[in-house]
Length: 120
Image (cartoon, rainbow, N blue to C red; front, side, top):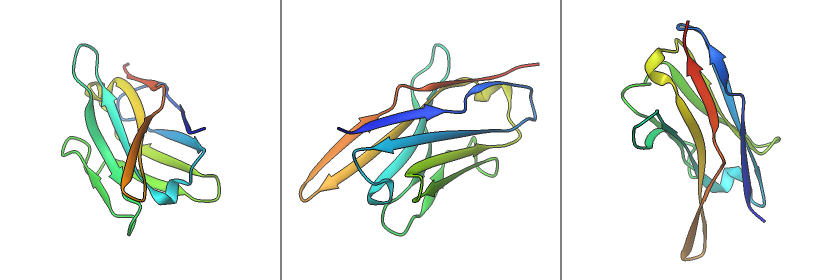
């Protein structure tokens, strides 16, 4: 059974840092395109960062480039999001997403989300 569990959220002051972790079970993260999304209060969910299965290339939303960094730990089977220089506008529920393809069929999985609040 596939499961994604996010952790690491919390309250942080502007300018601070947090590292989110997404622990996967039921599949290997190195075989999936992994993404972090976020949903600010009252707004739609938006894509924040991607790390691909093939080549491990990364991509980021313009709003977080140079501040957020996505990585994969193949030993722990986790995907992490290092968030630096946090701003109040980074406040959101952060979700982990996996796109896992087996043959011609791709499936998408979501975690339950973790709250990040940036406030003084």
